[in-house]
Image (cartoon, rainbow, N blue to C red; front, top):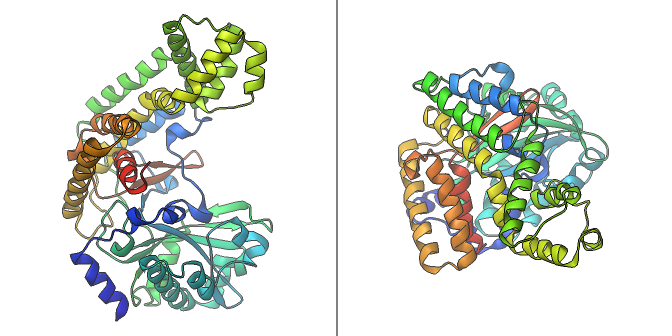
Length: 436
């Protein structure tokens, strides 16, 4: 069959899809399902919450309420069943009016027409999903999808359109189900539904289709880290340094961390240029620089500050915004990259067909990309590369690579992700693929 033949051809020649066409960016995002946060992305998370999260990770204290799942590195698709057929959503407009304008198989075909491998893969996914979902009872389809009111999020995984992790398998992996209102806004979600859908499909023997194995998320067993007591002391030391260096309290939030750290960095940078910023304007400028809020506009900066000070700040922000933001979040981000990497190194049940071979393949590819950027990259690319390499070093180096994008988990009702060393590796790979 043509899909299996396509898969076999790929095994002998790696697809160059991602580096050839920038238009494929949309397929790498969260699609209709949205974006998952790292803990350090959530400005409302308190430092005491972060400490509790660290301790739970080190000691393996994750329960059923944490809905632990492997985060997959594929292309996202949201699907539902409406008026007797499969429909798909790639953006909010497809979700409005309970999937009124969602794409059926013909719509997906037209959306990706002329896109080579990605066209073939998405058409095959719609065909296989139609068969597998269609095999469920009408009662189950109505309960799960509510005739277009609810959409299930899944990842399309195949070596033909591989991103960073080489799974070596063709899979459609379900995650959660989200319920939307008439305007296409999420109003409820079931984080366990992906597991249920996978089980139901397996029960009716509809999990093995023409191209894809249709399944729920990978079950993960979380264990305490080796030498958990010693590692807990190590991470507590990193945590306490962040608290002390940035003048924080246990009740302070990640937003407070970002603001305080930015204030410190901004005043240090101003001092280097013999610039004194009046204290009443430091918070507004720091909020801008940290990306917390841009309510303090450039026009107000020019009005409030002396010309020399306002000119210095505006020039500093324009030239250094990316570098400064990396510097702002580096301590907290590096802590979670290292913690997430150590957690995943302590796990073994990944979706990859051959985890050891996949990890080695990832390592060799990223070493080649690093060499390429060092030889051919411009100053901005080299600077970004050095930043990403420092993150990799903080996580234990390239030897710490594991063949997964990460894990997702629920903490106090919010869904977060640990991506560990995957995050800097993906950034480096993207620099070459997209010429960032």
